[in-house]
Image 1 (tube, each protein chain N blue to C red):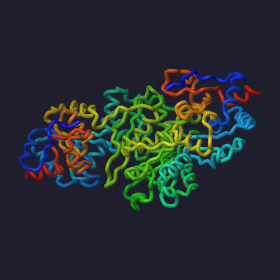
Image 2: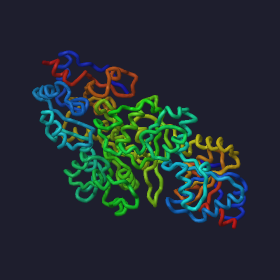
Image 3: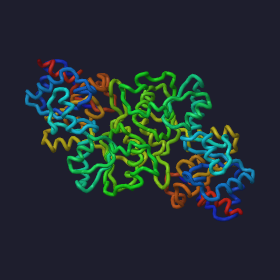
Image 4: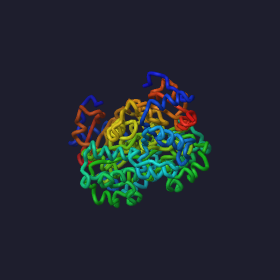
Length: 307
Length: 307
């Protein structure tokens, strides 16, 4: 799957201004675009300020489900960037929206078993849903079928859904109990996102998809995946913010998630080369990935070229 | 895939004797056939003694890689059954044979990264191979890319193979370092077996395949799987013991591993209903599994019917 026209590299003031004039709303992936782990990329603050001064609206769309939107505002603040919670969409929030708006579970009554981190449970709690699992310290104990409180006390019949995502506290206890819930056909199975890996400090580490695949294989079930590139996430954003897709641009560092998300969602697309992709892959017409409309060495080039 | 003739249920003395007369060698799966967890099934000792008194040769073939063959002889002994180490084939041993005989790694020089338990490393050690990973207590520490000794000290260039199997100590540290080795195309990828689950005390728990799938998905690689139903395991046994396949019978409790292993290996097959399968499934001609030549409520029926 390739775009019909060759990607345009943003290398001159004219191209940059032409790009900026086409869109009034920008959706940004974060890691690999704005920062790498704990390090802000060059000229990010200046570029975001430029866009704001031009009257553009900015949203931040991340497949990272380990942090809630509230925690993300703090991450932005730590870089000196002020972002409001309602500008942020995480895959954990998208999963909670799916539970509420698609599965229509009842807050205060139906419960959710979370194989993942607090970025999911915090969003569920804001919608009134009680979570089980997650970082419950009893799950840190080695699994013993004869003593696990989750086995001894039985499964909670109020659990109507399993949400699975990246969990750096993954262990056999969590896998085993998650599987017990997934063996009940009436319990829904939701995945935050299916990224197999993510980059960190020059290493490629196991991502949410890698962990979700484990319980999917054991249960023989396929989850509904909520993060990029699933269109449900974009549909939720477009609906919540009443966006005109033709005036929106998705900015990301991954062809298979960010750019696919933008292309399939009929948005403009900008790929930056500060993350996981190379110019060679962007220009390759034989790949099985969508190609962006625009690409740039770094997001900061928008500021650098127009100032 | 179904057998050409309907499975014969062993319900009379005549059928039992006819069955026994056809074979001089019996390959047994263990869990679900001889015992369930820590409980020996009825008349097992009597049946094994009967077979031995009739001059039959007995082998034990298990996909459990958590115990070595030496440890298995102790498990048999705990039930009062005397079995020699060379009558036992585990998927951990099969994996070690694969490393030695197919990959032809050099003992004393090439090393193996083990994401699994000591049933693998003990077999490797007997062949002279040094293992890394496995139950190394440093892997029990929470993963931190800045402090993990496996990251700080770098990957061991002598590691030429990853063996993955069931690991009840699975955690993010083990997944992350296993992935680092699998990202090297020159490092071979071997799986003990691909069972997605296994039964324990009435519960279905995540099996080796469920854990292996996680690192397979993250690395985008497919392992060479050594346990049942992979024919390499049977080929190794047939070669080591100089067996006549037409005189061998595989006895198991799973259609998709044990019976597939026997049917595809051109052995006779006996399914017992003391494990995971039902008579309905055995007789179902529409299933996608092979059907056994014989089936019985329990292995002990062979003794009960002929005495």
